Length: 59
Image 1 (cartoon, one colour):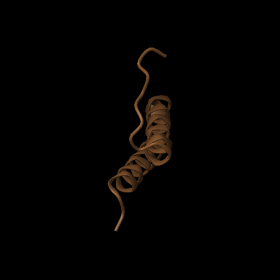
Image 2 (cartoon, one colour; image 1 turned 45 degrees about the horizontal axis):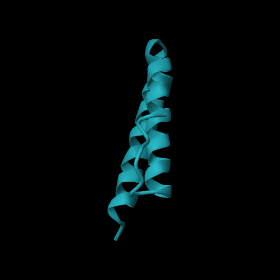
Image 3 (cartoon, one colour; image 1 turned 90 degrees about the vertical axis):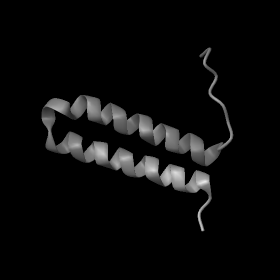
């Protein structure tokens, strides 16, 4: 059974894949959808590597 963090990172990666698919199929939205996908991938990385970490808002 996956942990909450593992499930969250999988959902985030699935959402990133969704945005990448939309980007490929809709050129006018490509830039925004690629940016969304990147953010979701980055958050998935954070959840996987440091699930209880906090983001420093001063950076």
